Length: 205
Length: 209
Image (tube, rainbow over all chains, first blue to last red; front, side, top):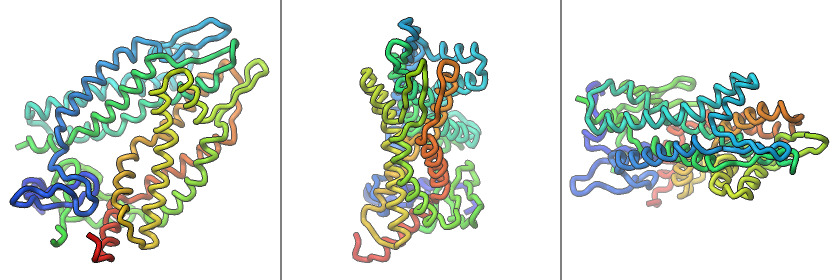
């Protein structure tokens, strides 16, 4: 196929799950994939609205996630609450630069850049920007790939709370920011999933 | 109805003649660069074997202590499960559920589904749930986060190293092995081939649908 033609322009719908192509019937389109049974949509349904709603919720939760303590370390009954940034500064102070960078990237930069990136993708599609669609698709791909790595902080806390539970000597307790941060990660993952990158291509002339 | 002998790119919808890459090669969409196919040597058999190995490893990896600490004579062991339970007891039920799903339940379902699908394909046994299993497998994949959990263990150990003495439990060896098996499993599973095989298997039984 030499001419660059989208499947939809040829009257074909690609199944989101199995990739099987189905012809759009003249009278009303078929609703389910014949191979795997998932419901057929030319593009993900309400992609922009869903993604926007998820991005806004994630952005709002990003604020308490950074303001409130994500965990409290109690040593000999002296409690010390840590925010995400506080934990990173602590790591830098104790000379763990590479680990501090890792946490910085996974818990601060990735969620923030993800939110900005998805917002840009939404603007791009909504205002029909004429862009290098290939580059924007690569950006989408990176956003979709990195999201799960932000769970790092949550997993670290779950290990710390179960290990460091030595009564009066030392204890680690998860803080309210942990729930907010976990929600940010989950919401941005859903946001990336609900965005349909084919919309970028649909708008290019 | 005859099958449409064409493919479309998942990320840019470009209509394509199906590529037939050889093992070890990758077929990418010429327009957006999306990875279309990545055939693997004996994809079905390897997936079957690796998921069987994963099923054996997942119990010790989840139940045996991963890391233990020793402070002032008292010791404590931590498993993935104990982390979930402690979070839950502290009232962080949402986080506890998320950790349980992404580090225990979804990896388990992932391996079970890979085992079921590759097993049915290997023994050429048609099953009407095959497409459904395959779909669940694809949707669950990104929510099973063993690799991320490993990084979490590393960061937690670095943080603890200054305040306590660390011991690594047998569970950690099982966990790391499971992690490797899981990564090999993910790379051996050729989704394109799996869907094609499911389709062919369905045609073996003409009375179906």
